[in-house]
Structures are given as structure tokens and as C-alpha cells.
Length: 319
Image (cartoon, rainbow, N blue to C red; front, side):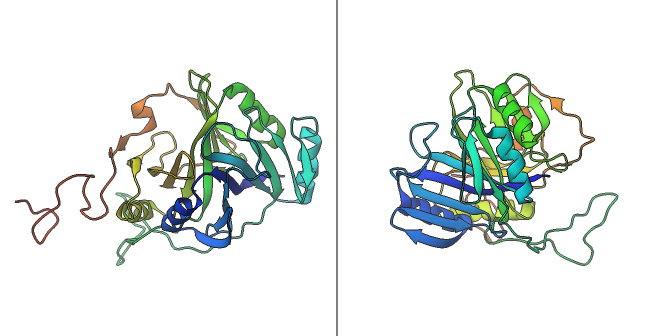
């Protein structure tokens, strides 16, 4: 029995036209469109739905403004759904219909589970040459004009009670703690073996409930850069990045999202097994990012945003 990751997310947004343009620039495929609802897919069939925030069928929002309304997690089998349904039958907002079971988590988010609809994909990623391992010989590393996200990799929420939320996901659905900010944050993965985190819960001093960001997995660091440069050329604003997280080892680039909060391209996160022992960190700037570029890299100049463009033949030329 295992939860396999995020199958689907739904935003409640105020400006669908802008959201449509953003997610298409982001690299998602638009597979369905109505006047008040857009459906996008990642390469492995994960779905990103952007619906008008006024739609009556949307779950209640955790916060005001555009935000995430629902997260659907994929499981291996119908037997998993039966087991989970028994565990959460008395939880607030319990539902069991349309091949899904779910409830409302302690933070006020609609959480659903279904037999996964994602599919395997065969993508080529970069090999790396380190001092003691030469994985790429007689071959140039790839460069990407834009990103095509493989899947919705993880979600991050501000929570009212990090201990209650961690207990909810680990006790009912078998999530496993990877690392923690004691009393302030918990990095959770769906199963003992997998990427560093599928869900990060962060308790702010004001205990505000809301969305921090949704992260999309791409092939490698080169696609983080290629995707970020393309989004910058399209005119969308960087929040922070590119950069690298010390805790998960992942490379990142965060952008502001018209459908709510932030979105992230990321690659090369740590892979963990059941032997991993959770670590404890005190949150701070250098814990969050080993390094990061404030304002991002401009897609046209290939330099930090607002930096003067090169004038010579080579990008390193100066006046």
C-alpha cells in the first residue's frame, strides 16, 4: 500500500485568461477549456485545474484571494482507498464518490485520494561529470528553450498547527517525515522510499493558513534554467531564483503565479529510503537557500534582472 504522489490540484482563481496564458507559458498542455474552468496536464498526466473562484462546486478556500482549493493524491489500488476511507470516515468533510475518497485536513484544505491516473514517461535527462564519475562522454549537456514539467512534484502550505497536520498525514495516509523545523515545519514524503518531500507544512508565527507554492518537477538543472529564462522572456515575475536548497539539495526557480501564490521549477532533489533519519533545522535564509539570485535572470540578457545587456559579440564583453 502506498501513496504515489500528487495526481491533481485545483486552483480557485479570479483571472482565468491570465492564468491560461501563464500555465501555457509554464509548459503545461491545455486539454480542456470551459468559460469558468481550465484543465492542464503535465507530461505524466498529472492535472492542474484552474477554476473560477465563484464556482459553487469548489471546496471552501483556506484564505482570501486566488489559492489552491483541493489536492488529489494518487494511490496504487482500490484496496488503498478502502483502507484510507476507514481511517478518515469520521474526519470533517468526509466524502466517498466518483472513485475518490477524502476529507478536510486540519488546515481547512480539501484532500482527496484516487487510484492514480498518471502514467510513466520516458524522458532523457542530463548526465553529469564529477571528479570521480564521468557520466557524460563525447556528448554535450542539453540546453532547453523552455520547460515541459514532468509532474506536480510537491505542495507547500502555511498551516495553523504543524503538529496536527503532520499527525493527520502520517497517521491516516502513511506519509513519512524527512526533516523538520521543530515546532515550525515538517517536510513529508508520501512513502518511505521517494523524493525528499511531497508536502511541506510551515507554521508561521501568526498561524496563517494558506498556500506558499506548488512545485513542478523538471528533468535536470538545465531545464530549471531553460524554463526560468523562457518564463522571464514571457514577462512573468521571478520571486526568487535560480538557487539551490541545502535541505533537499534541489535546484529551484520560483515565479509569481496569477492563480495563487508561487510556482517552482525544481530538479535533483535527494532520494530517501526508510533508513533515512529526519534531521532538525532552525529556519533561516542560508538554510532555505545555499545560494539564490534575487530577482532572477532576465531571459533576454542572460544576466541578473535589470542588469545592463552586453554590447559586444560575446556575453562577457564589456563597454
